[in-house]
Image (tube, rainbow, N blue to C red; front, side, top):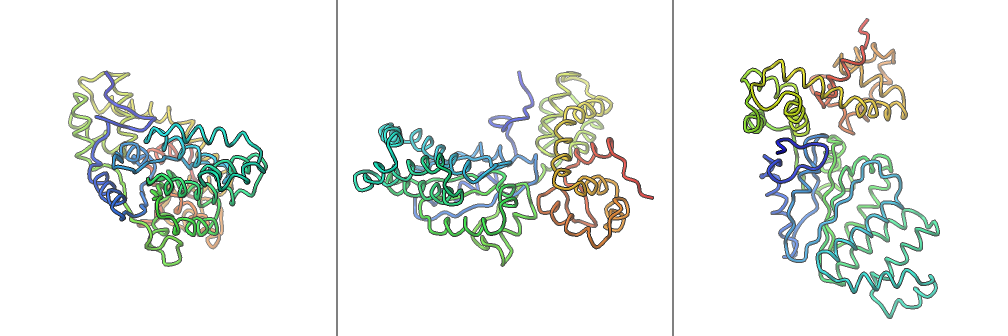
Length: 382
């Protein structure tokens, strides 16, 4: 029997303590068939279970179709447009059983572009849009135009079929930060004219998303209902672990402290304890030993994280290491050998994407990543 689950969205009995957030999202989206509803910003640090929450969201309202897109590392607008159209089509057919619509599209995309344009008046506009997107993708059409077409295709499909779509764009900020503010503004322009498509923009870039929701300069100012996810409260972790392990009180305290009560780490550490020690008589020493194994298992992933920042600029990697050891800008600058006046732009970016937070100085937001940094890199303070 499996007692802990990680590395993939957590569902069923493994998914706990997010009833309030699920209820709020469902309440907002339940208004869609009644002519209401609103777009949502789901905000929370990495490993706090945003993806799991979206996967557990039951949008079983009549005529409301969910579409999930993982935007993390999305390489191009063209690929995003391709995924949006294909997944919307697949979700529509699965929800409605309208295989005839799929067959029409399959027949249409085999035709020449000139033949498709000649049949605009003879067929559903959404089918023509879908086919033109596929042709444009092959022929290298402007990527932003392709993306606009994809979003408009979903709106056209919804209108023609009398349904609604909820697009869940997971790790939206990773894409938005790379593609820039003008792209975000253009996206907002498309979205504001849609009546049948709603959005859940999810991201671990807490500061960026907070600004997106609340800043008067944001294209989405007052256009998103924010829902925030944090680490679990300690009593949630204690209850979850106690149901699965026979663990000493001191060990349980250490378990909560070492994982920072982050859902992913709670699951990972429990899994390791189960498979290396067993369920019974778990001591603090066992927890610490298994925690070290968890750090080792995460080594490659954490090194890739640091490596991605170093590819952008070695300064980012240096600052991340420095922040794990010093929380004051002057100490961070001294540790990295940087001029203090050059530091803010780097700190701002790392704060925007959720790697660090500003709270009585600067700190890494992920306690396990911070622990790994301290074990593998030593920042000089002299």
